[in-house]
Length: 324
Image (cartoon, rainbow, N blue to C red; front, side, top):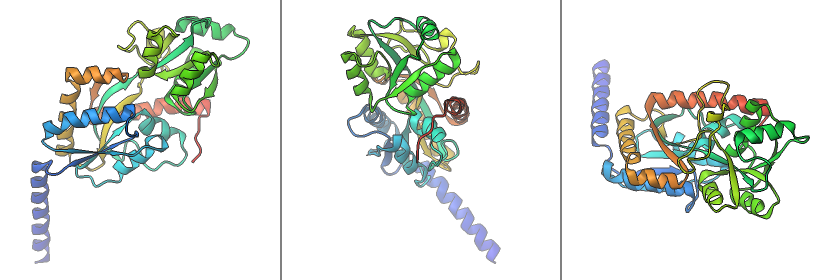
């Protein structure tokens, strides 16, 4: 009798689950963002939410969880109920750089998430003052090799994407560079204009107008050439890569908690893919330095895992670590 009751209960649960998935979504979807309100990451998240909502016939509630480089937001998504009603926007920092540089981290960037999909990649721009003795990557590598002192370069902090772009260049090009960590991209921009620092990495959204204004010059794009500055060559074009492997570029992606039902994840993925293929969305993302490049499901899971391995090698060799 107990076996019959258990079987009936299990069958009812499966029916209810299937029915719930078929009705999905039937209530608002919480969209957790890694950035504060008014930031570039916030604008990207709200753009996606506004466009996905009518496709899914659901409302989105944006939940800004800035702090700890995106780890607070990532942890909130990882620990949410896996029902499709909490998803998150993740970046290169929250799902690659922080997990490989912090000894203790609250979530596994691969195992603790269902992959709704990568929707774009971001290039990081290496810029220099106009009087810098190099105007492109090959000239810079030649200059660094003959320079008696390791050239200084700025990034927006230890273990930032800019810092990793500098260490990647140092290791793969066989040159010595000295990292100067700043507290933000705006501070780098100010000091470059003031002449206090001659070379630095900035995000593409900040760097593009800096170059177009003529106040600085672009040396290279890490990792690939960006449509924002199509005449600036990328690392990959000039032979600087991850040891001959396919280079995993900084990415933006949407995640759900692990164990979220596949039909729900598939529905979210289809909506995200449709959104990033919209011409106006492509154009707006490009304003933020993001080139649309959709990848979902198992393909993205493997891509992310490969990126963790590749960038961990850079971190280990450069001894890049963050304190807990």
